[in-house]
Amino acid sequence: FYAEHKERPFFGSLVSFMTSGPTMLLVLEAPGAVDKYRKLMGATDPAKAAPQTIRKTYGESIEANSVHG
Image (tube, rainbow, N blue to C red; front, side):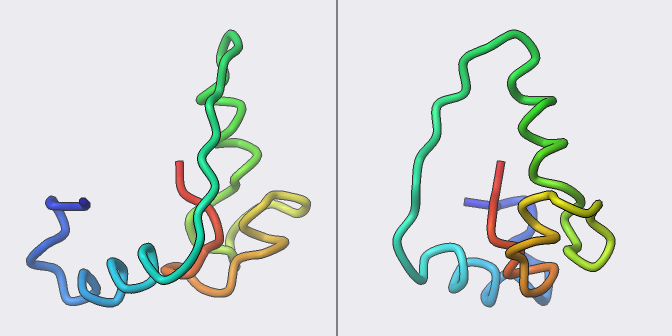
């Protein structure tokens, strides 16, 4: 899980957050579904995310950004 970040200083807190509570699994099935969902999620940093995106609306920080995809 995020093995590419294992040596980074934020790795421990990232894993702790990502495993801290319930999750919801989505199956995306449509032409261009991944690109459309990434646009709906918004930028990783909620402070930089566009209005009305999931991360802008619900994200707390760059780590606790409310959604992953």
